[in-house]
Image (spheres, rainbow, N blue to C red):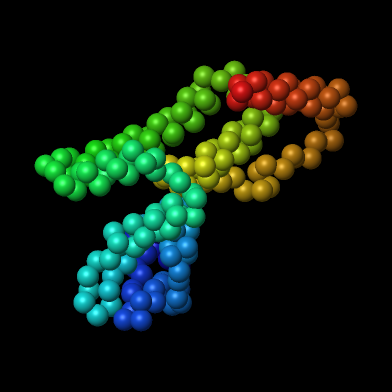
Length: 190
């Protein structure tokens, strides 16, 4: 079983093929991007020299996604990054970017916590499943940047079977509450 706390070691052979040392098979850049989106740290090393190639491959993954039209980085940010390599600010930029992404991850998790704590709808039936779905959506939209949480299991999202004691009126009341909650969320998202 893989140890998710250690970086996944990928070895690059002379033929430039990438080898996953945990699963003993070859991987592509897209596979590596998937590992990272799933929250896994990776380390890519040259088999012969032992050089760490991680940074170069991560930049290549970003460049390929940007080239495909999956533009995440605005032109201004890319321009500023290029400028940062030419001046004295070079030493400040990496720390600034790291702190910015950490604030983004922290802010996303705090936002989800605050939504649960301050939301009176949290007491409604089915709210937990809906909240888990929103968390999974936010994680998917951020590309795994958030670094925490996981997508709900499909059985968590499926409505549970009513107990034998549940009356038709109770079920109708729950359905109405759910419809009201969905309408309220639709208005909030506009």
